[in-house]
Length: 464
Image (cartoon, rainbow, N blue to C red; front, side, top):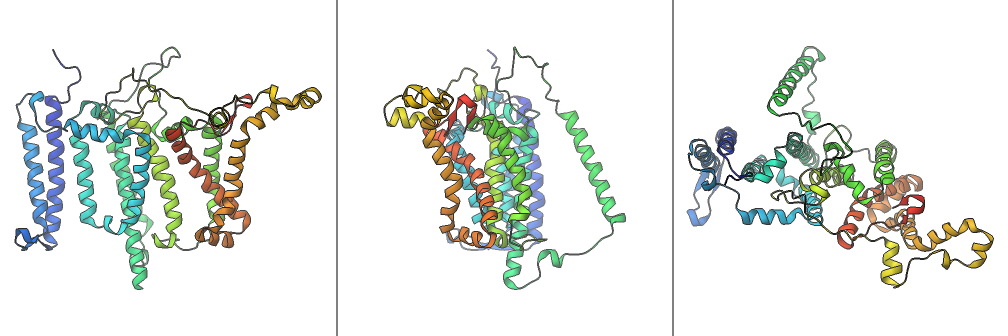
């Protein structure tokens, strides 16, 4: 019986061979570059402690890649017996990280590690090694059928490339920033001051722009020919895709809709983001870092930006693209997207936690309102019931946005912000910061204790 979902086919094996050949050519160029640098390193004492040219390990690695490409390109073995595949235990181990709590914690940890080890990561050899690890992981993972279906989907290919582009430009920023911080500490001119050679718009800049325009046009034409447009059947209310996803650039917004009401996730938070970006020039009092790359002069600002962009936006796009499957359930990157997979969701509002689970009684109703209110001012019955039922959530929300900024003043860094910004700018700044932190806070509460809403007022379609 023919397997309808084979992990490997002859065409896939040959395609991976061309991928390994491309990796070989990349590393061959790198080996030549390292060889011309005439650098050496001392081998461990176990191997004699002799000096070895730095190009030697890269030459060995390149030969291995070339042999891998040959094995894939000339093999006549049946795909089912081909041995160079991702092992099942590795797939199961990696799929274990598809848990949203673990995934989000890893994304934050990765961002923190990039900042902390920035001086090591910007070294060319380290960066090139990480790039090879990323490419090898992607190539080796393509031996799995389900992984291929996800990353090979025409509208997912740009997202895969986006991950490499984001990684490159993050590295480029830290490379320049670390160099400038080192130059500034040593009293040398900044990179931008030393390399400040001016050129004419015509012909230098215009020619460069023309070449880039032609190259980009060629890339888009080839892309359009090679990849089929992801067009589906005409929209029908009787048959919707499962899962039904927004365009990739809105997947972060769609993920927010899981944890917040549409009025918050679709209107308030995007408006706050736009308003916050416009308010930055009026809030920021730090004049350093203008016109040059730096981290130490803008450590807090860069860290906040990276937290908002990488874990709260790029990671949400990754989560929505590769981990959200049918019925909006979580799936591992090697897991089959089974439409019959069901996960019981027992989301509970904070008011239900307080009144039902903690006090072991029902939610307040109109019967709990004093008679003199219901008899004399019936219009107040519903507001009083809501206030009585949701008082804890309302109080926590007010404390979070109103009192927490004042408590944060006791943190030395925020104390400095308070005195340099003034009360109004400080309150705007801290509220924007707290609103940004509200998303991961709500996500963690949903994943850990199944908390649905902190304030739930369905009578007025107002939920937080």
